[in-house]
Length: 338
Ligand SMILES: C[S@@+](CC[C@H](N)C(=O)[O-])C[C@H]1O[C@@H](n2cnc3c(N)ncnc32)[C@H](O)[C@@H]1O
Image (cartoon, rainbow, N blue to C red; front, side, top):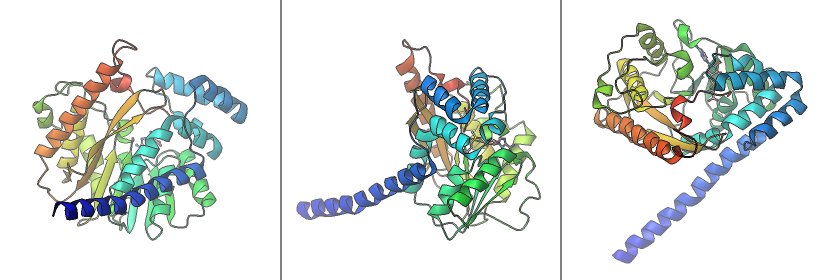
Protein backbone atom coordinates (compact mmCIF):
# COMPACT_ATOMS: atom_id res chain seq x y z
CA UNK A 1 0.00 0.00 0.00
CA UNK A 2 2.79 2.33 1.06
CA UNK A 3 4.83 1.42 -2.00
CA UNK A 4 1.85 2.09 -4.30
CA UNK A 5 1.40 5.48 -2.64
CA UNK A 6 5.08 6.28 -3.18
CA UNK A 7 4.88 5.26 -6.82
CA UNK A 8 1.82 7.44 -7.31
CA UNK A 9 3.63 10.36 -5.72
CA UNK A 10 6.71 9.91 -7.93
CA UNK A 11 4.57 9.58 -11.07
CA UNK A 12 2.71 12.72 -10.09
CA UNK A 13 6.00 14.57 -9.48
CA UNK A 14 7.36 13.48 -12.87
CA UNK A 15 4.15 14.47 -14.56
CA UNK A 16 4.39 17.92 -13.04
CA UNK A 17 8.10 18.63 -13.38
CA UNK A 18 8.29 18.81 -17.15
CA UNK A 19 5.19 21.03 -17.15
CA UNK A 20 6.64 23.58 -14.74
CA UNK A 21 10.00 23.46 -16.53
CA UNK A 22 8.20 24.09 -19.82
CA UNK A 23 6.32 26.98 -18.29
CA UNK A 24 9.48 28.60 -16.98
CA UNK A 25 11.11 28.26 -20.37
CA UNK A 26 8.07 29.89 -21.93
CA UNK A 27 8.46 32.94 -19.70
CA UNK A 28 12.19 33.16 -20.14
CA UNK A 29 12.17 32.69 -23.89
CA UNK A 30 9.42 35.29 -24.33
CA UNK A 31 11.23 37.85 -22.20
CA UNK A 32 14.51 37.12 -23.96
CA UNK A 33 12.84 37.52 -27.36
CA UNK A 34 11.53 40.93 -26.31
CA UNK A 35 14.91 41.97 -24.92
CA UNK A 36 14.25 41.78 -21.18
CA UNK A 37 17.28 40.44 -19.31
CA UNK A 38 18.76 40.90 -15.87
CA UNK A 39 19.58 44.21 -14.25
CA UNK A 40 23.02 45.76 -14.09
CA UNK A 41 24.92 47.86 -11.62
CA UNK A 42 23.16 51.23 -11.53
CA UNK A 43 26.11 53.26 -12.88
CA UNK A 44 26.94 50.73 -15.58
CA UNK A 45 23.28 50.74 -16.62
CA UNK A 46 23.11 54.52 -16.86
CA UNK A 47 26.34 54.74 -18.81
CA UNK A 48 25.19 52.09 -21.31
CA UNK A 49 21.80 53.71 -21.63
CA UNK A 50 23.45 57.05 -22.40
CA UNK A 51 25.78 55.54 -24.99
CA UNK A 52 22.99 53.65 -26.70
CA UNK A 53 20.17 56.19 -26.62
CA UNK A 54 21.89 59.58 -26.41
CA UNK A 55 20.59 62.68 -24.59
CA UNK A 56 17.09 61.30 -23.92
CA UNK A 57 18.74 58.69 -21.67
CA UNK A 58 20.09 61.50 -19.44
CA UNK A 59 16.61 62.89 -19.07
CA UNK A 60 15.19 59.46 -18.23
CA UNK A 61 17.93 58.92 -15.63
CA UNK A 62 17.25 62.35 -14.09
CA UNK A 63 13.51 61.66 -13.98
CA UNK A 64 14.08 58.29 -12.31
CA UNK A 65 16.38 59.88 -9.72
CA UNK A 66 13.80 62.57 -9.00
CA UNK A 67 11.16 59.89 -8.58
CA UNK A 68 13.42 57.97 -6.22
CA UNK A 69 13.55 61.12 -4.13
CA UNK A 70 9.77 61.17 -3.99
CA UNK A 71 9.08 63.85 -6.60
CA UNK A 72 5.99 63.46 -8.72
CA UNK A 73 7.67 63.18 -12.11
CA UNK A 74 6.13 61.57 -15.19
CA UNK A 75 8.77 59.06 -16.22
CA UNK A 76 6.52 57.28 -18.70
CA UNK A 77 6.41 59.91 -21.44
CA UNK A 78 10.21 60.07 -21.43
CA UNK A 79 11.12 56.41 -21.17
CA UNK A 80 8.55 55.44 -23.81
CA UNK A 81 10.29 57.74 -26.29
CA UNK A 82 11.24 54.68 -28.39
CA UNK A 83 10.54 50.97 -28.08
CA UNK A 84 14.26 50.19 -27.68
CA UNK A 85 14.58 52.67 -24.81
CA UNK A 86 11.50 51.46 -22.93
CA UNK A 87 12.66 47.85 -23.26
CA UNK A 88 16.08 48.68 -21.79
CA UNK A 89 14.55 50.63 -18.91
CA UNK A 90 11.97 47.93 -18.20
CA UNK A 91 14.67 45.29 -18.29
CA UNK A 92 16.64 47.12 -15.61
CA UNK A 93 13.77 47.93 -13.26
CA UNK A 94 11.24 45.17 -13.85
CA UNK A 95 13.04 42.15 -15.34
CA UNK A 96 12.98 40.12 -12.13
CA UNK A 97 9.45 41.15 -11.19
CA UNK A 98 8.16 40.19 -14.66
CA UNK A 99 9.90 36.82 -14.53
CA UNK A 100 8.46 35.92 -11.14
CA UNK A 101 5.02 37.34 -11.86
CA UNK A 102 4.66 35.51 -15.19
CA UNK A 103 5.87 32.26 -13.67
CA UNK A 104 3.23 32.64 -10.98
CA UNK A 105 0.64 33.57 -13.61
CA UNK A 106 1.33 30.37 -15.53
CA UNK A 107 1.25 28.25 -12.40
CA UNK A 108 -2.17 29.77 -11.62
CA UNK A 109 -3.54 27.99 -14.70
CA UNK A 110 -6.41 30.37 -15.18
CA UNK A 111 -9.16 29.11 -17.43
CA UNK A 112 -8.37 30.01 -21.04
CA UNK A 113 -9.96 33.46 -21.44
CA UNK A 114 -11.81 34.56 -24.57
CA UNK A 115 -11.22 38.19 -23.70
CA UNK A 116 -8.47 39.70 -21.56
CA UNK A 117 -7.97 43.31 -20.50
CA UNK A 118 -4.61 44.59 -19.23
CA UNK A 119 -5.16 47.92 -17.48
CA UNK A 120 -2.25 50.35 -17.22
CA UNK A 121 -0.41 48.22 -19.77
CA UNK A 122 2.34 50.79 -20.44
CA UNK A 123 4.63 49.51 -23.25
CA UNK A 124 2.58 46.32 -23.60
CA UNK A 125 5.33 43.83 -22.75
CA UNK A 126 3.08 41.86 -20.39
CA UNK A 127 0.02 42.37 -22.62
CA UNK A 128 1.85 40.84 -25.58
CA UNK A 129 2.85 37.91 -23.39
CA UNK A 130 -0.83 37.23 -22.63
CA UNK A 131 -1.64 37.56 -26.33
CA UNK A 132 0.99 35.01 -27.30
CA UNK A 133 -0.02 32.71 -24.45
CA UNK A 134 -3.70 32.82 -25.49
CA UNK A 135 -3.66 33.04 -29.30
CA UNK A 136 -7.43 32.40 -29.44
CA UNK A 137 -8.23 35.23 -27.06
CA UNK A 138 -8.92 38.85 -27.86
CA UNK A 139 -6.45 40.80 -25.75
CA UNK A 140 -6.77 44.53 -25.05
CA UNK A 141 -4.27 46.83 -23.34
CA UNK A 142 -5.16 50.32 -22.10
CA UNK A 143 -3.03 53.06 -20.62
CA UNK A 144 -3.29 56.83 -20.35
CA UNK A 145 0.25 57.33 -21.72
CA UNK A 146 0.13 57.81 -25.50
CA UNK A 147 3.83 57.12 -25.88
CA UNK A 148 3.46 53.84 -23.98
CA UNK A 149 0.61 52.78 -26.26
CA UNK A 150 2.68 53.68 -29.35
CA UNK A 151 5.49 51.41 -28.09
CA UNK A 152 2.97 48.65 -27.32
CA UNK A 153 1.59 48.79 -30.87
CA UNK A 154 5.09 48.62 -32.29
CA UNK A 155 5.97 45.66 -30.07
CA UNK A 156 2.81 43.76 -31.08
CA UNK A 157 3.72 44.35 -34.73
CA UNK A 158 7.26 43.15 -34.16
CA UNK A 159 5.97 39.99 -32.49
CA UNK A 160 3.45 39.51 -35.27
CA UNK A 161 0.53 39.33 -32.87
CA UNK A 162 -2.88 39.69 -34.47
CA UNK A 163 -5.04 39.14 -31.40
CA UNK A 164 -4.02 42.20 -29.39
CA UNK A 165 -5.08 45.82 -29.59
CA UNK A 166 -4.19 48.86 -27.54
CA UNK A 167 -5.98 52.08 -26.70
CA UNK A 168 -5.21 55.28 -24.81
CA UNK A 169 -7.63 55.32 -21.88
CA UNK A 170 -7.66 56.88 -18.43
CA UNK A 171 -8.74 54.52 -15.66
CA UNK A 172 -10.32 57.47 -13.92
CA UNK A 173 -12.86 57.81 -16.70
CA UNK A 174 -13.70 54.29 -17.78
CA UNK A 175 -17.43 54.92 -17.74
CA UNK A 176 -18.90 54.29 -21.17
CA UNK A 177 -15.65 52.74 -22.45
CA UNK A 178 -16.17 49.30 -24.06
CA UNK A 179 -19.98 49.63 -23.77
CA UNK A 180 -20.72 46.26 -25.37
CA UNK A 181 -17.82 44.26 -24.11
CA UNK A 182 -16.96 42.30 -21.02
CA UNK A 183 -13.72 40.56 -20.14
CA UNK A 184 -13.11 37.09 -18.74
CA UNK A 185 -9.78 38.10 -17.30
CA UNK A 186 -8.66 41.53 -16.18
CA UNK A 187 -5.03 41.96 -15.17
CA UNK A 188 -3.52 44.97 -13.45
CA UNK A 189 0.11 45.13 -12.41
CA UNK A 190 1.59 47.98 -10.37
CA UNK A 191 -0.93 50.54 -11.62
CA UNK A 192 -3.41 51.52 -8.93
CA UNK A 193 -0.82 53.09 -6.68
CA UNK A 194 -0.69 55.77 -9.36
CA UNK A 195 -4.41 55.97 -10.00
CA UNK A 196 -5.72 56.04 -6.43
CA UNK A 197 -4.40 57.76 -3.35
CA UNK A 198 -4.17 55.54 -0.30
CA UNK A 199 -5.82 57.49 2.55
CA UNK A 200 -3.33 58.95 5.00
CA UNK A 201 -5.39 58.06 8.04
CA UNK A 202 -5.41 54.27 7.62
CA UNK A 203 -5.27 52.60 11.04
CA UNK A 204 -1.83 51.38 12.01
CA UNK A 205 -0.29 52.43 8.71
CA UNK A 206 2.78 50.28 8.19
CA UNK A 207 1.72 48.04 11.06
CA UNK A 208 -1.05 45.55 11.50
CA UNK A 209 -4.41 45.70 13.15
CA UNK A 210 -7.57 43.73 12.61
CA UNK A 211 -9.31 47.14 12.51
CA UNK A 212 -7.50 47.79 9.26
CA UNK A 213 -10.00 45.44 7.65
CA UNK A 214 -12.91 47.57 8.84
CA UNK A 215 -11.85 50.77 7.11
CA UNK A 216 -14.55 53.18 6.04
CA UNK A 217 -14.23 53.89 2.35
CA UNK A 218 -14.56 57.62 2.46
CA UNK A 219 -13.19 58.41 -0.97
CA UNK A 220 -16.03 58.06 -3.51
CA UNK A 221 -13.64 58.57 -6.45
CA UNK A 222 -11.62 55.46 -5.58
CA UNK A 223 -14.81 53.45 -5.10
CA UNK A 224 -16.02 54.63 -8.51
CA UNK A 225 -12.77 53.81 -10.35
CA UNK A 226 -12.74 50.24 -9.04
CA UNK A 227 -16.51 49.80 -9.61
CA UNK A 228 -16.19 50.99 -13.23
CA UNK A 229 -13.48 48.45 -13.87
CA UNK A 230 -15.38 45.64 -12.20
CA UNK A 231 -18.36 46.45 -14.43
CA UNK A 232 -16.18 45.35 -17.37
CA UNK A 233 -15.66 41.93 -15.82
CA UNK A 234 -17.70 39.11 -17.28
CA UNK A 235 -20.65 38.59 -14.95
CA UNK A 236 -20.24 34.86 -14.42
CA UNK A 237 -16.72 33.63 -15.01
CA UNK A 238 -14.77 36.91 -14.75
CA UNK A 239 -11.52 36.94 -12.79
CA UNK A 240 -9.45 39.96 -11.82
CA UNK A 241 -5.75 39.38 -11.13
CA UNK A 242 -4.22 42.38 -9.44
CA UNK A 243 -0.60 42.78 -8.39
CA UNK A 244 -0.34 46.21 -6.92
CA UNK A 245 2.39 48.09 -5.17
CA UNK A 246 0.69 48.19 -1.77
CA UNK A 247 3.59 48.23 0.57
CA UNK A 248 2.01 47.73 3.95
CA UNK A 249 -0.75 45.60 5.39
CA UNK A 250 -3.14 48.52 5.90
CA UNK A 251 -2.94 49.67 2.28
CA UNK A 252 -3.53 46.10 1.17
CA UNK A 253 -6.50 45.82 3.54
CA UNK A 254 -7.91 49.06 2.12
CA UNK A 255 -7.49 47.71 -1.42
CA UNK A 256 -9.29 44.49 -0.47
CA UNK A 257 -12.13 46.60 0.98
CA UNK A 258 -12.40 48.54 -2.29
CA UNK A 259 -12.57 45.32 -4.27
CA UNK A 260 -15.20 43.92 -1.90
CA UNK A 261 -17.21 47.14 -2.21
CA UNK A 262 -17.26 46.65 -5.98
CA UNK A 263 -18.86 43.22 -5.47
CA UNK A 264 -15.83 40.93 -5.72
CA UNK A 265 -14.43 38.47 -3.22
CA UNK A 266 -10.72 37.77 -2.99
CA UNK A 267 -9.89 34.09 -3.30
CA UNK A 268 -7.32 33.85 -0.57
CA UNK A 269 -5.91 30.43 -1.48
CA UNK A 270 -5.14 31.61 -5.01
CA UNK A 271 -3.83 34.98 -3.91
CA UNK A 272 -0.28 35.29 -2.70
CA UNK A 273 2.67 37.48 -1.88
CA UNK A 274 5.21 37.64 -4.67
CA UNK A 275 8.79 37.94 -3.48
CA UNK A 276 11.61 38.84 -5.76
CA UNK A 277 14.94 40.59 -5.78
CA UNK A 278 14.49 44.11 -6.94
CA UNK A 279 16.80 46.15 -9.20
CA UNK A 280 18.73 47.53 -6.21
CA UNK A 281 19.29 44.10 -4.67
CA UNK A 282 16.63 44.41 -1.96
CA UNK A 283 13.94 41.83 -1.52
CA UNK A 284 10.56 43.17 -2.53
CA UNK A 285 7.16 41.79 -1.64
CA UNK A 286 4.05 42.60 -3.65
CA UNK A 287 0.58 41.19 -3.00
CA UNK A 288 -1.22 39.42 -5.84
CA UNK A 289 -4.97 39.15 -5.45
CA UNK A 290 -7.26 36.90 -7.44
CA UNK A 291 -10.84 38.16 -7.21
CA UNK A 292 -14.19 37.04 -8.64
CA UNK A 293 -17.87 37.74 -8.14
CA UNK A 294 -18.37 34.38 -6.51
CA UNK A 295 -18.29 34.53 -2.77
CA UNK A 296 -15.66 31.96 -1.95
CA UNK A 297 -15.59 30.20 1.46
CA UNK A 298 -12.20 31.75 2.22
CA UNK A 299 -13.46 35.30 1.65
CA UNK A 300 -13.29 37.33 4.86
CA UNK A 301 -11.04 35.29 7.12
CA UNK A 302 -8.75 34.45 4.18
CA UNK A 303 -8.45 38.11 3.30
CA UNK A 304 -7.47 38.95 6.87
CA UNK A 305 -4.85 36.21 6.80
CA UNK A 306 -3.44 37.57 3.56
CA UNK A 307 -3.07 41.07 4.98
CA UNK A 308 -1.51 39.63 8.12
CA UNK A 309 0.98 37.60 6.07
CA UNK A 310 1.82 40.78 4.19
CA UNK A 311 2.59 42.49 7.47
CA UNK A 312 4.78 39.56 8.63
CA UNK A 313 6.65 39.43 5.36
CA UNK A 314 7.39 43.15 5.42
CA UNK A 315 8.46 42.99 9.05
CA UNK A 316 10.83 40.17 8.09
CA UNK A 317 12.29 42.23 5.22
CA UNK A 318 12.73 45.14 7.55
CA UNK A 319 14.54 43.08 10.14
CA UNK A 320 16.89 41.78 7.51
CA UNK A 321 17.92 45.26 6.36
CA UNK A 322 18.00 47.16 9.68
CA UNK A 323 21.60 47.56 10.80
CA UNK A 324 23.07 47.52 7.33
CA UNK A 325 21.11 50.09 5.37
CA UNK A 326 18.48 51.22 7.86
CA UNK A 327 14.83 50.26 7.60
CA UNK A 328 13.71 48.51 4.43
CA UNK A 329 12.89 50.83 1.59
CA UNK A 330 9.98 48.59 0.77
CA UNK A 331 7.64 50.82 2.74
CA UNK A 332 8.56 53.88 0.73
CA UNK A 333 9.18 52.33 -2.66
CA UNK A 334 7.43 53.66 -5.73
CA UNK A 335 7.02 52.37 -9.21
CA UNK A 336 10.34 53.30 -10.71
CA UNK A 337 10.06 53.23 -14.41
CA UNK A 338 8.19 50.35 -15.88
C1 LIG B 1 4.38 51.16 -13.13
S1 LIG B 1 3.58 51.22 -14.65
C2 LIG B 1 3.04 49.55 -14.81
C3 LIG B 1 3.00 49.11 -16.22
C4 LIG B 1 2.71 47.65 -16.44
N1 LIG B 1 1.40 47.29 -15.96
C5 LIG B 1 3.75 46.79 -15.78
O1 LIG B 1 3.41 46.01 -14.90
O2 LIG B 1 4.91 46.90 -16.12
C6 LIG B 1 2.11 52.11 -14.32
C7 LIG B 1 1.32 52.41 -15.57
O3 LIG B 1 0.05 52.93 -15.18
C8 LIG B 1 -0.29 53.95 -16.09
N2 LIG B 1 -1.28 54.82 -15.45
C9 LIG B 1 -1.14 55.61 -14.37
N3 LIG B 1 -2.30 56.25 -14.10
C10 LIG B 1 -3.19 55.85 -15.04
C11 LIG B 1 -4.55 56.16 -15.30
N4 LIG B 1 -5.24 57.03 -14.54
N5 LIG B 1 -5.16 55.59 -16.35
C12 LIG B 1 -4.48 54.71 -17.14
N6 LIG B 1 -3.20 54.37 -16.94
C13 LIG B 1 -2.55 54.93 -15.91
C14 LIG B 1 1.02 54.66 -16.37
O4 LIG B 1 0.95 55.43 -17.57
C15 LIG B 1 1.97 53.47 -16.47
O5 LIG B 1 2.07 53.00 -17.77
